[in-house]
Amino acid sequence: MIPPGHDAEFVSRMEPVLDEYERPFDPDRPSVNIDEAGIQLIEETRTPVPAAPGQPARVDYEYKRNGTANLFVAFQPLLGWREVVVTDRRTALDFAAFLKHLADDIYAEAATITLVLDNLNTHSPASLYQAFTPAEAHRLAARFEWVYTPKHGSWLNMAELEFAALRKQCLNRRLGTLAELRAEIEAWQDTRNDQEVVAHWQFRTADARVKLRHLYPQTQAA
Image (tube, rainbow, N blue to C red):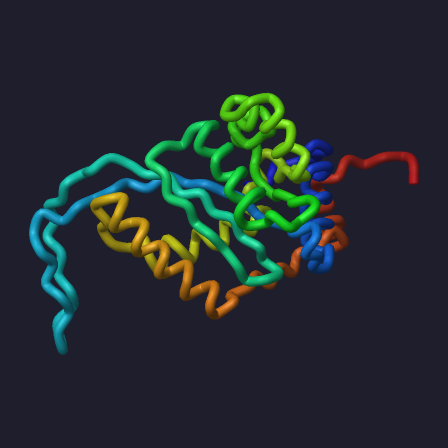
Protein backbone atom coordinates (compact mmCIF):
# COMPACT_ATOMS: atom_id res chain seq x y z
CA MET A 1 0.00 0.00 0.00
CA ILE A 2 1.37 3.40 -1.01
CA PRO A 3 0.05 6.62 0.57
CA PRO A 4 -2.13 8.67 -1.80
CA GLY A 5 -0.38 12.02 -1.43
CA HIS A 6 2.70 13.84 -0.19
CA ASP A 7 4.27 11.89 2.63
CA ALA A 8 7.67 13.04 3.83
CA GLU A 9 7.72 10.40 6.57
CA PHE A 10 7.19 7.62 4.01
CA VAL A 11 9.97 8.74 1.67
CA SER A 12 12.36 9.47 4.57
CA ARG A 13 12.13 5.80 5.56
CA MET A 14 11.90 4.39 2.03
CA GLU A 15 15.14 5.89 0.71
CA PRO A 16 17.44 4.35 3.37
CA VAL A 17 15.91 0.94 2.59
CA LEU A 18 16.52 1.39 -1.14
CA ASP A 19 20.03 2.67 -0.46
CA GLU A 20 20.71 -0.45 1.59
CA TYR A 21 19.68 -2.62 -1.37
CA GLU A 22 22.31 -0.91 -3.53
CA ARG A 23 25.12 -1.60 -1.08
CA PRO A 24 27.55 -4.28 -2.30
CA PHE A 25 28.04 -7.49 -0.38
CA ASP A 26 30.19 -7.14 2.73
CA PRO A 27 30.67 -10.27 4.90
CA ASP A 28 31.67 -8.05 7.82
CA ARG A 29 28.37 -6.19 7.60
CA PRO A 30 25.73 -8.55 6.19
CA SER A 31 22.40 -7.07 5.11
CA VAL A 32 19.54 -9.26 6.31
CA ASN A 33 15.82 -8.84 5.72
CA ILE A 34 13.65 -9.90 8.66
CA ASP A 35 9.93 -10.66 8.78
CA GLU A 36 7.45 -12.85 10.61
CA ALA A 37 4.02 -14.31 9.95
CA GLY A 38 1.48 -16.56 11.61
CA ILE A 39 0.12 -19.80 10.23
CA GLN A 40 -2.87 -21.93 11.15
CA LEU A 41 -2.06 -25.57 11.94
CA ILE A 42 -4.67 -27.71 10.18
CA GLU A 43 -4.76 -31.48 10.47
CA GLU A 44 -6.43 -33.84 8.03
CA THR A 45 -9.23 -35.94 9.54
CA ARG A 46 -9.12 -38.38 6.63
CA THR A 47 -6.16 -39.52 4.57
CA PRO A 48 -6.04 -37.58 1.27
CA VAL A 49 -6.30 -39.55 -1.95
CA PRO A 50 -3.13 -38.93 -3.99
CA ALA A 51 -3.23 -37.82 -7.59
CA ALA A 52 -3.44 -40.49 -10.29
CA PRO A 53 -3.39 -40.35 -14.09
CA GLY A 54 -6.43 -38.33 -15.14
CA GLN A 55 -7.45 -37.78 -11.51
CA PRO A 56 -6.33 -34.87 -9.30
CA ALA A 57 -5.52 -35.35 -5.64
CA ARG A 58 -8.56 -35.29 -3.38
CA VAL A 59 -8.72 -33.80 0.10
CA ASP A 60 -11.68 -34.14 2.43
CA TYR A 61 -13.46 -30.92 3.30
CA GLU A 62 -13.35 -31.76 7.01
CA TYR A 63 -10.27 -30.86 9.04
CA LYS A 64 -9.11 -30.24 12.59
CA ARG A 65 -7.68 -26.95 13.82
CA ASN A 66 -4.59 -27.38 16.00
CA GLY A 67 -3.89 -23.76 16.92
CA THR A 68 -1.34 -21.49 15.32
CA ALA A 69 2.40 -21.18 14.88
CA ASN A 70 4.72 -18.30 14.07
CA LEU A 71 7.43 -18.11 11.44
CA PHE A 72 10.48 -15.86 11.62
CA VAL A 73 12.44 -15.50 8.39
CA ALA A 74 15.91 -14.07 7.84
CA PHE A 75 16.78 -13.53 4.18
CA GLN A 76 20.14 -12.44 2.81
CA PRO A 77 19.17 -11.48 -0.76
CA LEU A 78 22.68 -10.99 -2.15
CA LEU A 79 23.70 -14.54 -1.20
CA GLY A 80 20.43 -16.33 -1.87
CA TRP A 81 20.37 -17.60 1.71
CA ARG A 82 17.44 -17.79 4.09
CA GLU A 83 16.53 -19.34 7.43
CA VAL A 84 13.02 -19.86 8.76
CA VAL A 85 12.52 -20.47 12.47
CA VAL A 86 9.20 -21.90 13.68
CA THR A 87 7.92 -20.91 17.12
CA ASP A 88 4.65 -21.55 18.87
CA ARG A 89 4.34 -17.90 19.93
CA ARG A 90 4.91 -14.44 18.51
CA THR A 91 6.14 -12.39 21.46
CA ALA A 92 8.97 -9.96 22.11
CA LEU A 93 10.82 -12.77 23.89
CA ASP A 94 10.59 -14.99 20.81
CA PHE A 95 11.86 -12.18 18.60
CA ALA A 96 14.74 -11.54 20.98
CA ALA A 97 15.71 -15.21 20.90
CA PHE A 98 15.65 -15.08 17.10
CA LEU A 99 17.98 -12.06 17.10
CA LYS A 100 20.36 -13.80 19.49
CA HIS A 101 20.42 -16.79 17.14
CA LEU A 102 21.39 -14.49 14.27
CA ALA A 103 24.04 -12.67 16.28
CA ASP A 104 25.69 -15.64 17.98
CA ASP A 105 25.11 -18.55 15.62
CA ILE A 106 24.57 -17.34 12.05
CA TYR A 107 26.63 -14.14 11.93
CA ALA A 108 29.01 -14.64 14.85
CA GLU A 109 31.98 -13.37 12.82
CA ALA A 110 30.31 -10.21 11.51
CA ALA A 111 31.06 -6.85 13.07
CA THR A 112 27.60 -5.40 12.38
CA ILE A 113 24.41 -7.00 11.12
CA THR A 114 22.11 -4.65 9.23
CA LEU A 115 18.47 -5.58 9.68
CA VAL A 116 15.79 -4.45 7.23
CA LEU A 117 12.42 -4.89 8.92
CA ASP A 118 9.00 -3.40 9.45
CA ASN A 119 7.65 -1.37 12.36
CA LEU A 120 5.95 -4.09 14.39
CA ASN A 121 6.05 -3.07 18.05
CA THR A 122 8.32 -5.99 19.00
CA HIS A 123 10.84 -5.16 16.27
CA SER A 124 13.16 -3.00 18.35
CA PRO A 125 16.09 -3.28 20.77
CA ALA A 126 13.53 -3.07 23.59
CA SER A 127 12.70 -6.73 22.97
CA LEU A 128 16.27 -7.64 23.87
CA TYR A 129 15.95 -5.84 27.19
CA GLN A 130 12.72 -7.72 27.92
CA ALA A 131 14.42 -11.05 27.30
CA PHE A 132 17.95 -10.73 28.66
CA THR A 133 19.97 -9.08 31.40
CA PRO A 134 20.94 -5.46 30.69
CA ALA A 135 24.53 -6.43 29.92
CA GLU A 136 23.50 -9.18 27.49
CA ALA A 137 20.83 -7.01 25.86
CA HIS A 138 23.38 -4.21 25.41
CA ARG A 139 25.89 -6.61 23.87
CA LEU A 140 23.37 -7.93 21.38
CA ALA A 141 21.88 -4.53 20.53
CA ALA A 142 25.36 -3.28 19.63
CA ARG A 143 25.62 -5.99 16.96
CA PHE A 144 22.68 -4.65 14.95
CA GLU A 145 21.93 -1.69 12.72
CA TRP A 146 18.19 -1.17 12.26
CA VAL A 147 16.71 0.00 8.93
CA TYR A 148 12.91 0.25 9.04
CA THR A 149 10.49 0.18 6.14
CA PRO A 150 7.94 3.00 6.20
CA LYS A 151 4.43 2.55 7.52
CA HIS A 152 2.34 1.01 4.72
CA GLY A 153 5.62 0.11 3.02
CA SER A 154 6.19 -3.51 4.02
CA TRP A 155 6.37 -4.32 0.27
CA LEU A 156 9.84 -2.78 0.45
CA ASN A 157 11.01 -5.65 2.64
CA MET A 158 12.45 -8.42 0.46
CA ALA A 159 11.66 -10.95 3.18
CA GLU A 160 8.06 -10.69 1.95
CA LEU A 161 9.21 -12.22 -1.35
CA GLU A 162 10.47 -15.23 0.58
CA PHE A 163 7.21 -15.56 2.47
CA ALA A 164 5.31 -15.44 -0.82
CA ALA A 165 7.46 -18.28 -2.19
CA LEU A 166 7.12 -20.22 1.06
CA ARG A 167 3.33 -19.96 1.02
CA LYS A 168 3.10 -20.99 -2.63
CA GLN A 169 5.63 -23.82 -2.58
CA CYS A 170 5.36 -25.24 0.93
CA LEU A 171 2.41 -23.92 2.91
CA ASN A 172 -0.23 -24.51 0.23
CA ARG A 173 -1.45 -27.66 1.97
CA ARG A 174 -2.63 -28.70 5.40
CA LEU A 175 0.06 -29.11 8.05
CA GLY A 176 -1.26 -30.20 11.43
CA THR A 177 1.63 -30.13 13.91
CA LEU A 178 4.69 -28.05 14.72
CA ALA A 179 6.92 -31.05 13.99
CA GLU A 180 5.37 -31.52 10.56
CA LEU A 181 5.58 -27.80 9.84
CA ARG A 182 9.25 -27.63 10.84
CA ALA A 183 10.16 -30.66 8.73
CA GLU A 184 8.44 -29.31 5.62
CA ILE A 185 9.92 -25.83 6.01
CA GLU A 186 13.42 -27.17 6.63
CA ALA A 187 13.25 -29.22 3.43
CA TRP A 188 11.99 -26.19 1.46
CA GLN A 189 14.65 -23.93 3.01
CA ASP A 190 17.50 -26.34 2.28
CA THR A 191 16.42 -26.67 -1.35
CA ARG A 192 16.25 -22.90 -1.84
CA ASN A 193 19.64 -22.42 -0.18
CA ASP A 194 21.26 -25.17 -2.23
CA GLN A 195 19.96 -23.45 -5.37
CA GLU A 196 21.11 -20.05 -4.04
CA VAL A 197 17.86 -18.37 -5.05
CA VAL A 198 18.62 -14.65 -4.88
CA ALA A 199 16.35 -11.63 -5.13
CA HIS A 200 16.78 -9.40 -8.18
CA TRP A 201 15.61 -6.08 -6.76
CA GLN A 202 15.34 -3.45 -9.49
CA PHE A 203 13.64 -0.51 -7.74
CA ARG A 204 16.25 2.10 -6.79
CA THR A 205 16.20 5.45 -5.01
CA ALA A 206 16.50 7.26 -8.36
CA ASP A 207 13.51 5.28 -9.66
CA ALA A 208 11.45 6.18 -6.59
CA ARG A 209 12.02 9.90 -7.11
CA VAL A 210 10.51 9.57 -10.59
CA LYS A 211 7.83 6.89 -10.27
CA LEU A 212 6.72 7.95 -6.78
CA ARG A 213 7.31 11.66 -7.15
CA HIS A 214 3.76 12.36 -5.97
CA LEU A 215 4.91 11.26 -2.50
CA TYR A 216 7.70 13.80 -2.30
CA PRO A 217 6.67 17.16 -0.80
CA GLN A 218 7.25 20.11 -3.09
CA THR A 219 9.90 22.44 -1.67
CA GLN A 220 11.25 25.79 -2.70
CA ALA A 221 14.89 25.01 -1.85
CA ALA A 222 17.05 23.06 -4.28
